[in-house]
Image (spheres, rainbow, N blue to C red):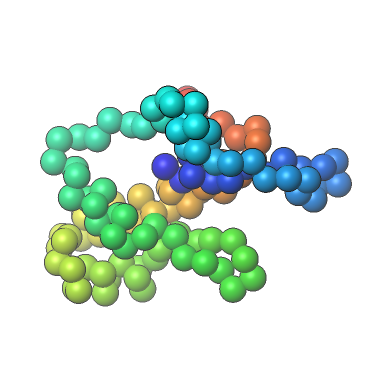
Length: 118
């Protein structure tokens, strides 16, 4: 999801951003096409719902984003009770990290989707 949601930076030769294109997800929607997403295992919906309720990223003071981390996940678990086991928290942490990594990769106009990597 992070890869699809990232706005795409088109850079000049000096590395500065020339312009920013709409995200791949917006481009799929504008074209009337369904974005390629992985199939979820049965019963995983609650983890995805928790992921979006937590919000997978946090802004950085100087711009950019970072993945939601343990200081956000632990109170989220206590407050919502939507997840309670350690493995669920670890999975949620991994999902947030993967989203953030995908978002950063997706900003590159030549980035390769995690779905297409070997």
